[in-house]
Image (cartoon, rainbow, N blue to C red; front, top):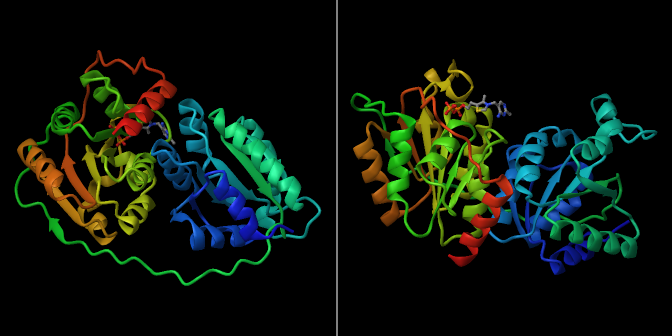
Amino acid sequence: MLQTNIFGEELQKLGFTFYSGVPCSLLKNLINYSINECEYVAAANEGDAVAIASGAFLGGKKPVALMQNSGLTNAVSPLVSLNYPFRIPLLGFVSLRGETGMPDEPQHELMGQITTRLLELMHINWLYLSTDPEEAKHQLLYANQCMNYNQPFFFVVRKGTFAEEPLQKQEPSTRLNLIKVIKNKGDQMPTRHEALTVFHACQGINTVLLATTGMTGRELYEIEDANNHLYMVGSMGCVSSLGLGLALTKKDLDIFVIDGDGSLLMRMGSLATNGYYSPPNMLHILLDNNAHDSTGGQSTVSHNVNFVDIAASCGYMNSIYIHNLDELESSIREWKQTKGLTFLYLRISRGFSEQLGRPKTKPYEVKERLQTFVRNN
Ligand SMILES: Cc1ncc(C[n+]2csc(CCOP(=O)(O)OP(=O)(O)O)c2C)c(N)n1
């Protein structure tokens, strides 16, 4: 069995101090250690945890993601379409519920059989974490080397690997919404391109622009392909979690997260996590066209959703209904003076240019130049 605090210190010595995850009883003691001794972000689901950890990587951290193997399924989308194409490494610990030959509950049976094969299918290096302290230390060094090659590495953790580590008292963070502006006039309904042009014009020298999957990233790329931009391309719904990880680790940067209604609906639990950790340097903008515009304009189900209320009740400091481009510009300029986790909601019209191209810069090149931008700012 591994003494959890000693193993945790080994991790710290290698620079692993930022954790995000969703608990599992088999990983309880390592999670408790990370909450007690390191920075731990409690994600709403394991895919968000991977995206938060990836954002922390962009912010210069060596991140750790913790999850039950049942939650590895939730993390497949970012692992294959964020970490892989962008070459973003992270150290994962995934528990092995349903290990073959061990009594466990029926819902873990199949997942227990396919956990390591699933990792292999995703081209992720992995090892069973040894319960021998010396061997585990060597395994950590090997995992660390893989990370240096920008590859994720996962430890598969069997029952009884970690010794008891009591959870210290956690101080809950209660965030109050201070400003909520609701709809009070007609909507201008600009195009997405027009809205993006405003964000682009309002960015400062310390701004990072993160654009969600689909046309949002492609249109931003068309407006300008710049070092401080990231076009999400895959991992739909993960953009604000990526922003959270970056905002928490690079507090002197302004992180503009540009989201779509389809994307946000896909992972709406992220709003609660964002509100709880409330990075004051994050501005989250939702462009709502009531559609999956990028895939043919099919309706989403956002028509009845009051995103302004939801963000406010999740603890965003400001949650503001924007009716037109002038308000959008003035709200962004005001935010740059006052800061605080802010949600801006703008209804936009559907549609995009037929000639719209796709980013020619490869995702890992986008990541590398963003890392340089982040380091230099
Ligand atoms: C997990 C996942 N499911 C589906 C898709 C396909 N897809 C790409 S963009 C998109 C629509 C995104 O809708 P929204 O966020 O509202 O942005 P819009 O296209 O309206 O700008 C979909 C469904 C995907 N990339 N990933």
